[in-house]
Image (cartoon, rainbow, N blue to C red; front, top):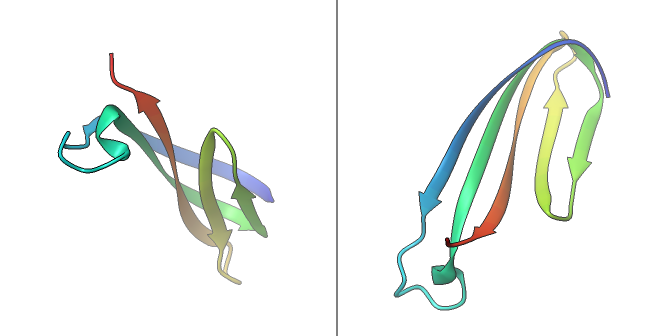
Length: 71
């Protein structure tokens, strides 16, 4: 992806209730982004997963998330 400007907002520690199997031991960190003057797309997989894309007019956005073990 090629981008002139990217703005990110991050929300940390979204608590997953303990009664949800498997995921109850984790918290989620979420990032959102706004892309200005961009072209293309980006897919991330692994410890932090997400997707970003732009429209033909150059504006776009995306999100990513990461699971973290409860402290």
